[in-house]
Image 1 (cartoon, rainbow, N blue to C red):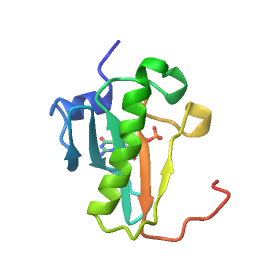
Image 2 (cartoon, helix red, strand yellow; image 1 turned 120 degrees about the horizontal axis):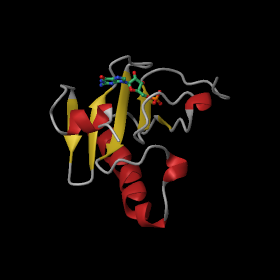
Image 3 (cartoon, helix red, strand yellow; image 1 turned 90 degrees about the vertical axis):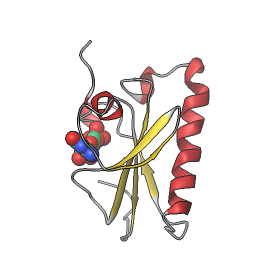
Image 4 (cartoon, rainbow, N blue to C red; image 1 turned 30 degrees about the vertical axis):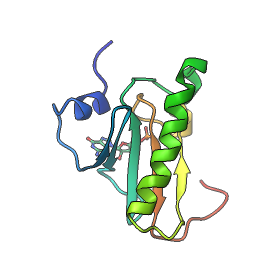
Length: 113
Ligand code: 5GP
């Protein structure tokens, strides 16, 4: 399997605006932001999409949620943000390396499009 775009960013083969990193995850700014704050929270383990994850991924999946909260607090987002996971091409997924979108800084409508 060829390396995913996000794996290349993790390996510093492609540059990105990295705002947080730890043993299990990395957080970067989205290159095409859909809100004033648009981050991607990415596991270092390559899981193509959420529905490919299994019980052995429980720790990393929970970790991503905790990182989202931590980064939101560090950026003073006023406890106001949305987390989105696009699962599958028909749901809008374009990079097949699991990632959480964190969106903040504007009104976010419901239901989403
Ligand atoms: P998806 O559509 O898979 O849910 O989200 C993929 C996201 O990755 C998109 O929001 C897209 O703008 C972002 N993206 C695509 N290529 C790059 C890149 O090279 N660098 C960064 N930082 N984000 C990217």
